[in-house]
Length: 81
Image (cartoon, rainbow, N blue to C red; front, side, top):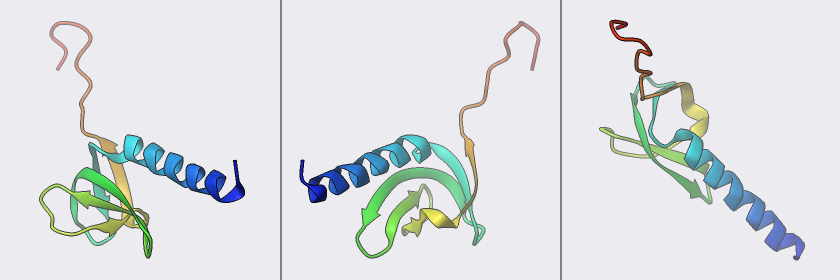
């Protein structure tokens, strides 16, 4: 594999890893916007960017201040809430 193909493959693998890690997670951005990550893009000018449900636009992943899974764990025993 040529060096260019290897580099491209590394970048696309990183994009896939970030998509798996962020899509569906609740996030808060540094500007106060909050919501669930709906998609991740690779932008040739800005790097990786995210879109958030309920907000128009795309933001750099570097603006994520806090992230959390949106799925809540269910109680393991009856009566626990």
